[in-house]
Length: 302
View: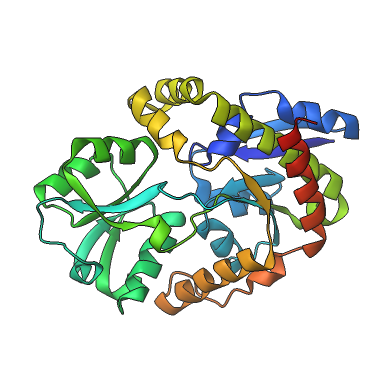
């Protein structure tokens, strides 16, 4: 059997794993082979799991919630440690937006459907505002920095090398850092039949992912150079962005489920999803121990 992992540029663990041999090494003793399916939009991960294109994928916090809302039967497998400093809501340094409340009626550019939706929706909710009613959300066009400088938009949620470059420019101020609002984890989820029937395969995938994370943490310059050549931007900005990531996986626990449920409830309230989502339906407690053991094995180099 071939186990297919979905890979897109926004998930650094999968992005680097696809360049390494670790998945093949971990699956071979189980009699399985590995394949990677590359795609550009992480918000499609739930649909790709549902139609059988992939068996396992990873995104930020929002896509698995919207996948459940769409009726896709997914199971959480593992999550990253909180990604402090990974993303931020930027405003012009000398502009009129001084607080989140000042965003009422304004335009914010973000990756709609990504973890960035979770960040903005919760930040607004904390200040008595609504993602649906009080801001205009627009998708990125590649010109966000200039539009923010000119006042064409009021805010921009940036991540990775773009955020590092924006910080370096001195033209912007961080109105909201992810750390103060959401845990901003990478989230890994799979088809239910794989998670329930082949927990040893899930554990092998997690071991491979943790090995890839360890490789990235120990080879930041090489990982940054590859990302810059593949995606554009300055290698130094990529290295700065990669350096703040935790590169550490954890089981999906009840505490994580509570984080996701809070997001799901906010999304329902503002109309981002059209039906209630019970996040616990995608939680498989029996996976917690094998995933924890897989992470430990990878950390020990076993």
